[in-house]
Amino acid sequence: MSREHQNEGISEAGLPGPTPSLSSDEHQLASMGYKQELSRRMKGFSNFAISFSIICILSGGINSLGQGISSVGGASIGIGWPIGCLISLLFALGMAQIASAYPTAGGLYHWGSVLGGRGWGWLTAWLNLIGLVTVLGAINVGTYFFVIGAFGEALGLTDNIGTQAAFVISFTAIQALVNHFGIRLTTRLTDLSGYLIFAVASVLTVSLLIYAPTHDFSRLWTFTNYSGKLGGDVWPQNASLISLFLLCLLLPIYTITGFDASAHTAEETVDAQRAVPRGIVGSVAWSSLFGWIMLTAFVLAIPDMKTAAASGFGVFFNTLGAVLPGALKTALYVGIFLAQFLCGLATVTSVSRMTYAFARDGGLPFSAALRSVHPGHRTPVVAIWTSAIISVLFTLYTPAYTTIVSVTVIFLFLSYGLPIVMGLFAYGRSWTVMGPWNMGPLYRVVAALVGVMVVMIFVIGVQPPNGKALPITLGFLAITAAVWFGLERQRFKGPPIGDTLRVRQAELEAPESTLGSASAD
Image (cartoon, rainbow, N blue to C red; front, top):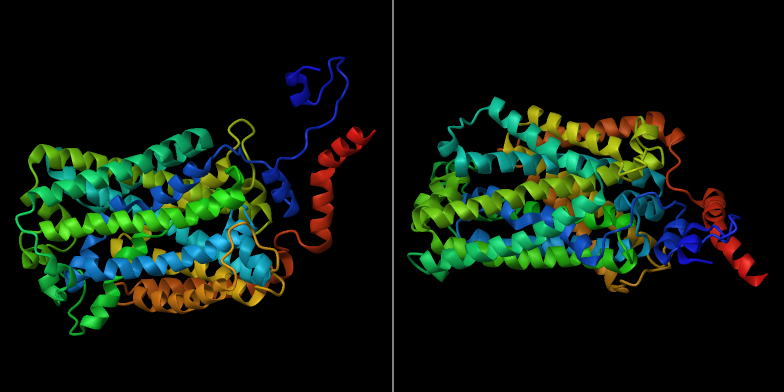
């Protein structure tokens, strides 16, 4: 029999032959009750790159820089950045442990359901979806402001809500279109994005150090109150340096987020039980390190700290305009813009996979359409375009960048924290089978710290001037509670468990059983 015929399960005589056995990844997926529908083409680096691209230190690390410099000055980078990154790393470690055991698309939703029950899973899914939709909005709004700051004058662009809407709609539509046509093209672009971020961040760092008028390292641990007018009114007047320092943590916490993308693309990743946790932790670790080095160089290159802080969110452009040669500055601007655009592209991939996974278990309105997979491209096309449209609508409702960032941080880290904390109570009880990535009893310590960090992030995220963040968050939670207790508690069954899971496992493993019987005969 020819190899081609063997792959198709057809004998040379045209009669049905034995069906090939499931791959180890498909076998693991089948054990959770799901069929391999998406195209599994991503290798380990690609899984890392998609999270690294969404984190994108050239996006949040630059567009939100005013939140740091205009709070306590250089100490926001020298001290605040590593502390904020360590907080994100705690979440990444907890997620990696669970992802290794349950490598499935829409990972957080599945984890919350398995570890805490379908109600917690349902809540996790909604929190994560809102967080992913808002982070897509924040990224593309931030990219728009970068375009205005970098090229606005040369292109004759005026910053207004109409121009912002046009750019955000255009960015999002192109990103959705690329995702529409398959994971192969998306993966190639996110792989490119990973290399691009490394390259541009390195060139920017070296350039800033070379052209810096001074190298005053004391700036990195000097606390100065730049609230109010001294900081371009990024933060309201505040006499407490401690309070301002906590606010500056929004810069690294917002930047080092989106690493759940590695989990959301687990069903498209080869050797997912190992590659996904490595992608989660590796993307956070490398982004944290490169971001700290890059932003440290930026603080050292600032000609005058008072002037820089007073420029607010314009601090990046004012500093580069004062320090770097024109041609080099423009080249860096182009590279940063491309990295930010690809950051949005990877985010569309992440949110659409979460939407697809939740709809697969009937958790969303119009689930039948949202869980559908294009037969040719093997992508969840309806989920891609629905997520993109909702993201644009959110930015039209909340055009203020800082508020979008705060809402993003709150919802994403709540959704990250819930399954990790559920795992704390399930560990060693209902959750006894771990994956290859296993911290052992240390997981309990990590999970407990994550619970504390969730509360802290919520408190920081609703501080002025982000007044809308609190009613948006509380309003969503109230609606969620009403929907769950009024409707979904009776209707929503969650991921397959018990007898349903056993039936699905038998159906999905049937081809492998057939092969085994044929071989024995």
